[in-house]
Structure formats: structure tokens, C-alpha cells
Length: 207
Image (cartoon, rainbow, N blue to C red; front, side, top):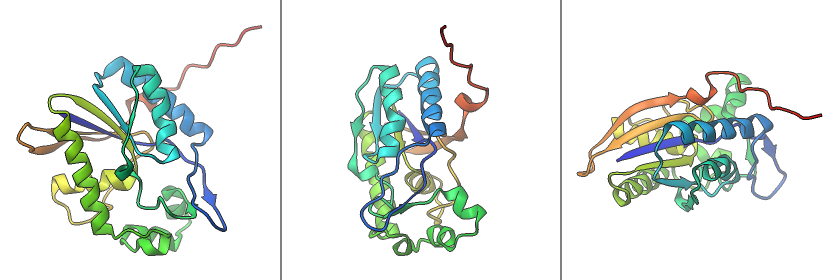
């Protein structure tokens, strides 16, 4: 079977005094999601669609589900490690500004980012969840729209790296993992962005 792991689209920056940040996509993120949906409908045979429960993943999934004519399965254990945090700062912003939270994230000091989950527990849950999806859908292609750390954790387990965050999945990027009937996994591709490789045609207006 083929697991097609997809990161959500570009997401709004959110910092709250209290409460839980569950940010939406930016306008660019919504456009990325629409282009992703069009490309998947035209080029892939998707048998099943899965999404994280977080808003940015569900908003990315919505146009895909509509174009494919499929209802997405929401899997709670695909939520990102910062699901309970009161802020969401895009990774590229933290890197560009040399925000100390970026190093904390990469080094697994997630408690400094408002996370309550241990990084190794996060990795174990992510791997078990995606392996379970693969086992349930043998012989099929399953698109899973989720988050950067989920994708890092699973692909890292497949290739055998000890680093939890070892590469940066791009927004709405595709990552292919082949899973045999015996459960043997192999990474086929990383960071595919065919739907973003050319400019989107301008929308037609009337009048």
C-alpha cells in the first residue's frame, strides 16, 4: 500500500495570552490546498483520506475531500505536538529571526513551547498511528494530511534516524511511503510539490 503523507498549508501566526491556539490557514494556505486538491484529483487514485483534527489540517483537507468526493476520517492521534499550546509561530519565521524557540523545538525541549507530551511518546504514537492506518488499508493508497513533526517522526522511524526533527516538510508537500503486506516500509519520495510548480491560472471574472 501507499501512504501519501501531506503537510497542511501555510498557517496564520497566533499568540494568545491564554487558551489554546488552533490557527487557520492564510490566504496563501487556502490557495495551496485548492491546488493540492486539483492535482490529487487529476493525478492520484486515493482510496481513503485521513486528517489531523487541528484546524489547519482540516482546512487543507476540505477542498481535497470535495474534489475526491470522499469524507475524511479524523484521527485524533495525528495532532501536532504543540496542539495544546497558546501560540503557533511558523517554523520558517522562528528560524529567520533566530528565535530560541526554534532550537528548543529541534532539540526536543517541547515543554518550552507549551507542549505537555514527551518527544519519544510523540514519536511512538505517530508511528503506531500511521502503521495502523497502513495495516487497515492494505493494497490501497491513503492520503494523510497532518503536520511537520508527525511526518518527521514517521519517516525518521522508516529510515532509522534517531533525530526526531531531521528535515523540513514544505507546506502541502507530498511524502510517499510504500508499505508491504508484511509491514516492510520504504520511503519513496520526500517533499514533492508538483501542484505548486507552476503559476495558478487567474480566476475568470464576469462583467
